[in-house]
Image (cartoon, rainbow, N blue to C red):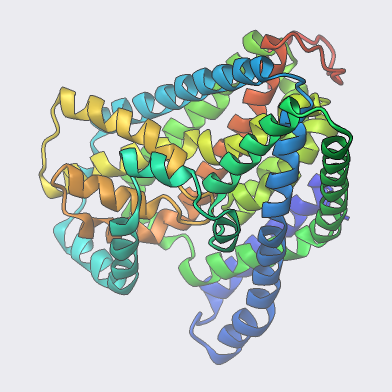
Length: 432
């Protein structure tokens, strides 16, 4: 059973096994490669593919039901406006704190040139793919235009989550405005699709402890933790920024914005956080996040199905923070000086760019490459952070998912909701 305890045990098992292989065996040995190809690789990949298979029907049904349950377009506009305000505020704070720390510690100015060349060379093949993907990333007006799909089935085939979100939102509004027996029957059918999808997700999540062990094993057995030493300054600065956002800003919002016990909130959210950290995908974690929000945190479905579903793409605090810090780190590394006005522009781009970043592992790397080109920073330098990206990707995904749960709790309170919250002693306690 995929309890938080079992998921943590799976993570620990994968971590220990991976470190043992990396330390005492040759990761390129035949038996290690065979295990990663035919056992752990298959289990981990099938788990992620099964979750991704169910994301589109889940997003489609959950968002339509969430919008339809609001009753009128004015209530939808109010919740949407409040969510946009919260997302801009929280993401802006995350990016600003990250840029301040990167300016203070300047880790890009302390890496040896020989190490830089070695890391870039090691990741040359992956850099080519990222550069090509970065050239295809939509931005600005182009991103806005492509949110509206010309063919909704084509958007489903391409797994274009933003386009599917727009169509689902539009259809939900249409159902609110249409009061006929046929439209009621259609909504009932969509509710049935949601129920069936959640049941299938429950079956997939039951295998999570085993899949998490395999995913973590594959990452650690190959990379180990040695690469962290070479880029310790960069990794440490990013982790400090993420810790400040997760352990200071989020608790303050839960305590003052949602009027809930921080300790209880963290305890009841941990299943989603572990899943996000292990899969490095906010999209794959979406089913778990929805269930945790409604069953563990007791938040109303009318809020969570809108906020969590949209937030998986549009409220990515950790991703925006990482993008801004990485661009500034690469600027320091390559000797490109960004003045205050340029860094303010960088902050704005990262806040807005977080909306279009794919909620999948390493989804932010093409966006970073695109931003580097905009500021005249050699994007090839991105190859330097590829060795530590998997670990940092796990961390920023956990921040993203935690932000969606915090947003749901805060917006529930702003919307006048009073969830039946399980408390831990004093419900106003801020202690974690």
